[in-house]
Amino acid sequence: MIRTLSGLSFRASGAAKPTKDLTTRRLHSTYDVAVVGGGIVGLATVRELILRHPSLSFVLLEKEKELAAHQSGHNSGVIHSGIYYTPGSLKARLCVRGATLAYEYCEKKGLPYKKCGKLIVALEHEEIPRLQALYERGMKNNVRDLSMIDAKGIREREPFCRGLMALDSPYTGIVDWRKVALRYGQDFEEAGGTVVTDAEVNDITAVTESPAGSTDGMKYPIAVRDKKGNEVRCRYVLTCGGLYSDRLSQISGCSSEPRIVPFRGDYLVLKPEKHYLVKGNIYPVPDPRFPFLGVHFTPRMDGSVWLGPNAVLAFKREGYKVYDFNVRDFADALSYRGLQKLVMKNITYGIGEMYRGIFIGAQVKILQKYIPELSLSDVLRGPAGVRAQALDRDGKLVDDFVFDGGVGDVGSRVLHVRNAPSPAATSSLAIAEMVADEVESRFVL
Image (cartoon, rainbow, N blue to C red; front, side, top):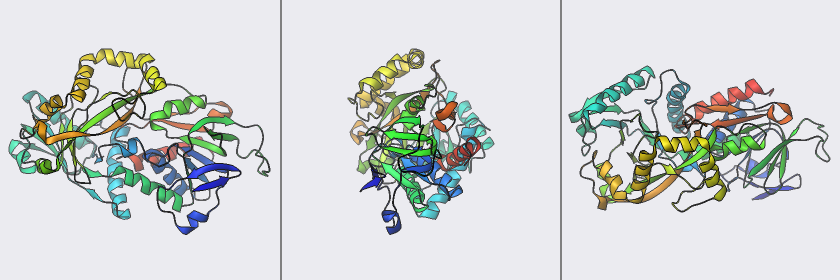
């Protein structure tokens, strides 16, 4: 539906079926807070903000025609329990709290989920000390119901899986995170918020005069414009741009680092007649020599089973196909010193990932170590996702949350969520609390 914003055209979101009141509510061009980015973090955060401040006006701007179109809708669908993260770290606390909040939210809203559990399986004796360290880490993080099991215990939980020992996490689950994100958006609209889609923001600037016909003076000193020239005025801006978080920061005059480098993960899928091979999530023991986790088995809410993913450089920030290519995205990635250093440190690993992406038999060979009954004829090429990986100039993966603002007329009124690392979906409601706290500490709402 096209609606008029003080003479400007924006497309309002159809993320959820609005009530009659929401359908007829008139949009306007001035808001207290504009949030840029309609992924799960942006939606959870704007929902949290409007619930805390119901008297303020909020608008969410999303560049796609639908909400949750990228990372929030292209992920494994796992509700993580918080095993992997350093005890006491922000990631650990947010994941553990986020998982609890996610289950409670799904129950409250009637969203389907399954607590199908997860096994982290050690195949080799040298992996067992790392597995034991993971168990101790998970216990320090207060992850629920963790236990170490032997080969017999593995077969009891996953009859077709083989391994020496495993860490059993029955609290791990699965959900359709896109449905969850859209429900956040529905909550936001029902609370009086405005969602605008098809609005790709490319300019955030300070203004020197009030809008024509306005009697508010300079109450709304920031102008947010999209590529079509449409504009909204606001007091403050929060960006949750995911794959474009670094560019959104740059256009407001803030830092260009950490840089976002897109990595594509290609999944295989089990043929339906082979779904019986996998009951829950089956994961490898992480190898600290490599930057990414490795392939795993993931059941989905629709009954399918995904295998993978690999991790290869994407030639386009939203490039879900092998041949998707964008000149600017590719040049930005290759020219960045941080990526060059990461590649040089992991060149053998990277070549292996590319090889397994092309020749799926190589990927299946790794998967067979966990489920020997699996064969090449049991799998098909599946979907892909693109991960917004933040890198610093030394080639290190940025594994923590990064907020960015600035000084001056614009910078002092803008907060950028530069990095919301995995598991951002699991942690989304807890992240929203943290970001809302940050907004309240920086801005006078």
